[in-house]
Every structure is written in C-alpha cells, then in structure tokens.
Image 1 (cartoon, helix red, strand yellow):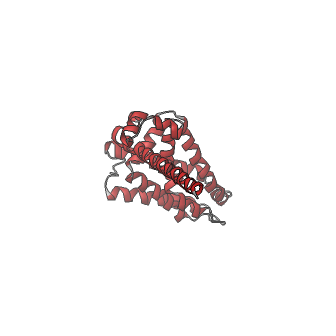
Image 2 (cartoon, rainbow, N blue to C red):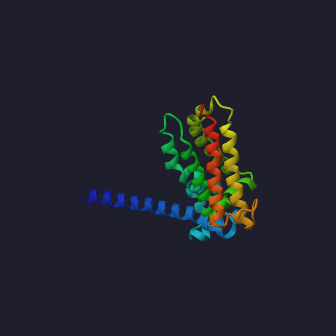
Image 3 (cartoon, helix red, strand yellow):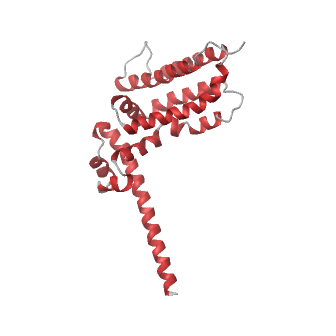
Length: 221
C-alpha cells in the first residue's frame, strides 16, 4: 500500500512538472509576439523574451535548444499558409477535378485580408525580406511545399492553355505582400488607392477576382 501511494505521488509530480513546462513554453512563444510588436525583430533576443515571459532566459535553450528555434516555432503558428489557411487548403486538396476560380480567388482574398488585419504577420513578412536567417528560409521553404500540393491540382487545368498560372499567382501573392506592407508601413496611396479604407480594400479584392477569372476563362475551349 505504501509503495502504491509513493508511485502515485511520483506520477503526480511528474505530470505537474510536464504541465508547468508546457505552460512555460506557451508563455515563451507568446512573448515572442509581444516583443515583436513592441520592439520589432531587431529587439528580439533571449533577454527581452525572457523578461516579457517572466522567466529565466536560460530556459530558451533548455526548452527550445536555441533562440532561433523558439522564434521559428512562433512564426510557424502565425504563418498564413501553414496556420491560417490550413482548412481552406485542405479543402481544396480534396478536389479531384481541379479547383474552381472562386476558391482560388477566395484564398487570395483571405490572404490579403489576413495580412491587412495582422500587424505581427506584417512584421514577420518584413523580417523575411530584410534578413537572411535559416529559420526564415525554413518557413519560406515550407510554404513552397504547401503550394506544390495545390499546384498538383491546378497545373493540369492549365496544361493545354497559354496561361502560366504559377507566374500569375506569384505576381498576385507578391503584390498582396507589397501592397499591404506599403499601405500599412507609411499609409501612402498606391496607384491612387488607399488600402487603409474599406473602398481601397474592396478594389484590391475585386481586382484579385478579375485577374483569376481572366486566367481561368483562358482554359475554357
């Protein structure tokens, strides 16, 4: 009886420690975002994250192995293609006869709106084109892998057309990134369009839909 009680107490202690560890890891991951908002990526270091999380900075290495691993974990949980668009993409991957234009337009409009509404995601995108970091490259490469799964379905739809759908989508996605970052960073107009207004947002969304529609109509013979 005494042995069973000791084993039970030991399991409870172990379980409690594991829960404490997971809670601390979550706090550390959340702290990355808070520091990113307050100080930008240049102020993102072990000391600032530890201070924000209220923990000893040595735990960065104890729990994640490195600062880069911790930051990569945070970015992976905020990334549009890996996180926010997961349900939409998984749904598209179930289509066996190709992807309809409204689904493609909807996905890109969703990306546009998500980036507009998420200041942290904007800062992550700026960081991704401002510094050469292995973990930023890893995230980018993972986005490409997700994109390839979508292209496996989309490419055959354009096989017998003169439309380079990959080139068109590359320009659209890059345009979404730049327009949002440009509009949100300095608030200036772009081609006379103010992205910080509902009218400006709607014009870009409608233009995305029009471009995708023109591309898909070329596949109809």
